[in-house]
Each structure stands twice: as C-alpha cells, then as structure tokens.
Image 1 (cartoon, rainbow, N blue to C red):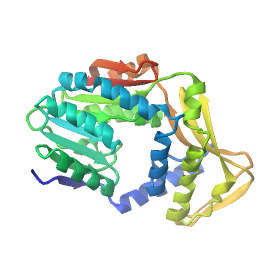
Image 2: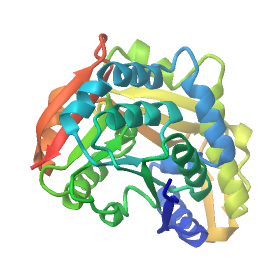
Image 3: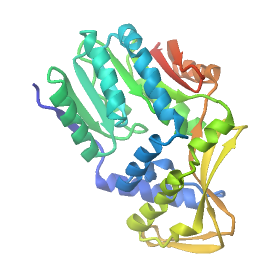
Image 4: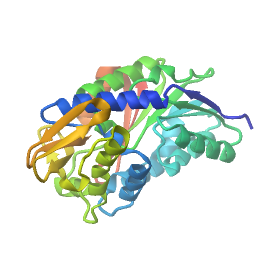
Length: 325
C-alpha cells in the first residue's frame, strides 16, 4: 500500500480572511446575504447529516439510489485511471464510485478535494485501508478557487465527481465561473460527473428545506453562532426565524433568516455595526433546481460535450456525465 499524499492549499488564515470578506460584502448589501459555506462548522455538519436522514429531505437518498442504479454504466463509459471527488461527500457514495470504477480495472488513483483538512485526513485514511491497491492523493482546497491545482492524470484520464446537488448552491454567475474553471482544468476527453436537483412540485421541494422537526431551522440559525464565535458578534440567534421559499422565476429554493424585531448587531472583528428592521430577511442559501435542457445548455456553453444523463423515476434528480470537448 502506498502512503497517502496530502497537498494543502488552504490555511486557517485563508479561512478567516474569506469569512471576513464574505461578512463585509454580504451584510453591507441590500438585501443582506451570507454564503452557505459558513454553515459547516462541526455542529453545522452534524445538523446537515441529520437533515439528510429526514423523511422530507429527498435529494440525498434520491441521488444515492440513482447512483447505485447507474454507477456501473457510468464506470464502464468513463474508464478513467483517476477519480477526483470535489467535497467530502458521503462515504457511501464515495464507495459506490470506488467499487464500480475499481471493477473496471483502470482506476489507479483517488483524489478527494475538501476545505477541511481534518475531515480529509480521516476520509483518506479510511479509503487507503479499504482500497490498498489505490493511490490516494488528497487536496485541501476550495473547489471555487483551486481546480487548476488538481494533480494531472498519470497517462490515462480523470473524472471529476461533483455530487450532492451542491452545484445548485452557486448563483448563475458563480456557476458559469465554476464550469469554465473546471473545463479549463481538464484535458480534452476528461470527464465530469455532476449531481443536480431537478425542478419538481414545490409541495415536495419546500418541505425538504423546512422540515417539521425544525432541524433545518436550527441548521440555518447555526450560521449566526459561527459568526458570534469567529467574529465576536452579538447576534441574538433566537431572534431570527427560519424561512424557506420557492422562487419560481429564479428556479430555486431560498433559505433566509427573518428578524423578529428591529435590532443592532455588532461585529468587532470586521469593525461593523449592522441594523435589522423588524421582518427583514437575510438570504443564507440558494438551492437551484434545474430543467434538464437548461443544465445541458450551461454545460455545453462551458465546453462540455457528449453528455449522458440519468434521472430517477420521479425526475427529481439527475446525474450527468459530460466530456471536456
């Protein structure tokens, strides 16, 4: 077994600088917003794992079953020597991919990229134990910034897996930038496997982000606890209500935090004082749900061709295998 290799392109100071920047920009905007990446401290990650097991939250189990049903076809069509995974993903989805690709006989290396060094080290160690014939090369980085630093193929070709519907968390301009950056990082003939939520009945979509048990509400408010801890701010976490709404013109679920009363919040670490009016809403996440034709058009515009799409029986989720032209 070859010892795993780890490259680190992010540090604690990078993360602090990014948080300070996002807070300054987002809380100065009208309407206010925060990017969803700050949900995921240790507590936020635990809450999200709880969300994925809730009866209302269909995306995770739908993608998992779709992947289970189609992964052998995907592996046979791809025939890659290097599998890159953006974001830690669930261990089950990772192993579905590794098992199917290893069975083709071509897979030589697994390259996970994640912002969390500790999470990545744990995932790498587990994969190295379970797949001793596979080289493991981890990259601590941000998929919005460090795609060009992914290790090159070793004589074959790579497939980059970006699952979980995370692509929907990017705004249109961010999404176009991501697709363009990924295409630029790939050689012609290399592949992307994308998991994306599809537009379905709002009566199904909205409860997935506003569950009856209130877990998603706690997850949403947790971002304020992160700011209190990291920036010394004085948000009254319980003074904000969780809101989830379907924005039909934009084709996305929006999660927001709504102030129950007028308040002033101080954020000493970024030298800011922020005022909230009663009922004012701050956007904390978007989750775009795609029409298949729109998604395929965005990929084609970025330079991805030969697209193959698999969907579940209810057309709620899609896996798209696309080749860099």
